[in-house]
Length: 90
Image (cartoon, rainbow, N blue to C red; front, top):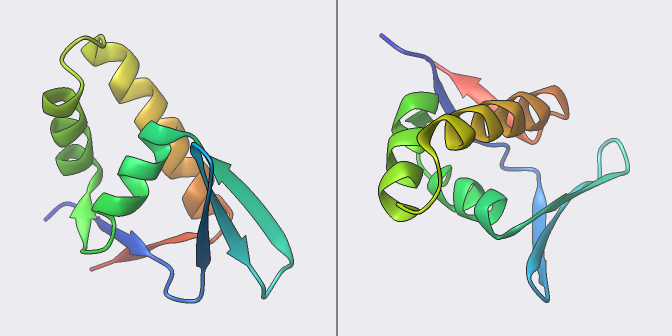
């Protein structure tokens, strides 16, 4: 079974113009998401695999190259996991 990802429930999110700000009060860090990153954050309300997120974005943004979506989404997820904003779940 593929690894699922979900938002860390301790993270606070706030909209600011066209960005979404993620605040981790436990380590006093702030992370900004652009509109596509905000879409990824929205998908992570429920456990999802990286592949599920990528496939949804490919359908949602047909004008973008699939390879670019894969690369950018994988990089974003890695950063979110590293910052403990997103958690891996069984």
